[in-house]
Amino acid sequence: MKLHIFLANPESLGEVLHNAHKQGAGPGANPRARFHYIFQREVEEHDQDLEKKYNEDLNTTLIFSGLFSAVASAFIIDIQSELSPDYEQANNVLLEMLLNATTGTLPPNSAASIPRWNGPNPVVVQVQCILYATLCATLLAAFLAMLGKQWLSRYKENETRGSAADRSRLRERKLTGIGTWKLHLVLESLPLILQFALVLLGFALSRYLWEVNSSVSSVVIVFTGFGFLFYTSIVTASVFSFDCPFQTPISLLIRFAVRSATPYLRKLR
Image 1: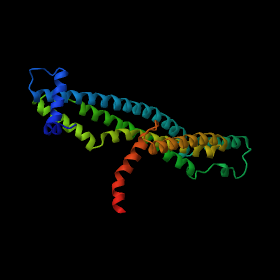
Image 2: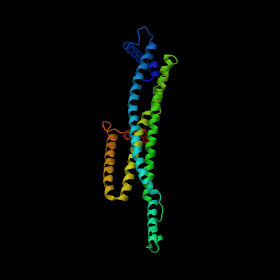
Image 3: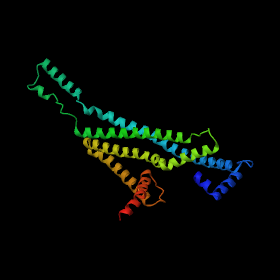
Image 4: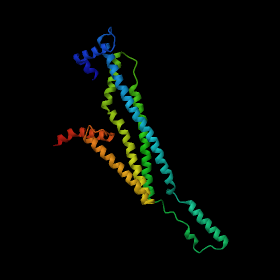
């Protein structure tokens, strides 16, 4: 409950002061001082729960981003050579021509056997674009997770200057700002970037392997498709059922978007 509501409601204020007295705010303290004592104590408990919850989530995001970016980088490096001419093959042809010339067995029109570079395979270009998008998404998720930890650290800072009333008002402003700027929604949306990057990686891997060997690619496609269908199913279930235990960030976002758009849709009718 907000500070100004306590001050405007004598019954709520009396209840808080009674609880403050029971919790040891001090029998000699005046009512307003006891009020600020219990207010700051309640907010401190809320802040500790908030910091613990989201710090664990952000640490998980940072770890997964590091592992995921390493996997994406490995694929990028492995396919990078296919974007440039194969100089080793050309050197082998030239060495063979040189050997044939020294032995007098050089066939006519042997220069035509030198491979010509007509640019990279379009499939390789597409796959590389998707892989770089995947890498950028994982780095963006890591960057935002670091910012999120800084936001939590800044919010948790306690102001020691000023009176107890001033400190209580400052904490109230910070607490109100969390709801106004939807900090919970922003922090819970960060894993969506990694989930999107995972879909991109699965698509890129399937597309590249299909060009190399369709049988191997089929295995990746089956598992990627199964994972996508499973994830879509639990998101749909969690959107339509609030009691569903499979809540995900995207289901919370969809529910929030529907709830926000409902009043506007009713006005259009």
